[in-house]
Length: 133
Image (cartoon, rainbow, N blue to C red; front, side, top):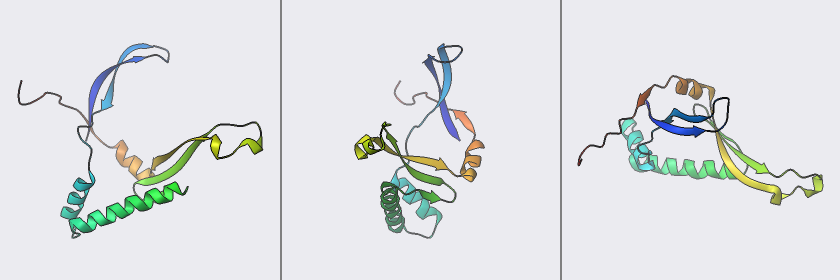
């Protein structure tokens, strides 16, 4: 279940600009490599150090392929695809590496993962602080 919070924003575009309220994802914490390793080792017969070694190797290998300009495709998750933004030039000979302004990695979820995401439930995050008050 995805948690959300209600926020007020100034919307400056569209037919009805002004103060509006909308939902934003509430991320209380991010999942660490350590947490992933613990969860995988608890749900399989693979030990924590072996899971860690495989995940670190996966990180290194995926990043290397993306940095070589190759898309990396996972059957269920989707694809990590390198992308660039470049300045348009009037002449073909003016296009070189210096016209490339940014490089990034896009993630495109697979159709199956998109379907799973569309079925995800939502719940408003409880922001009440417990403890000292």
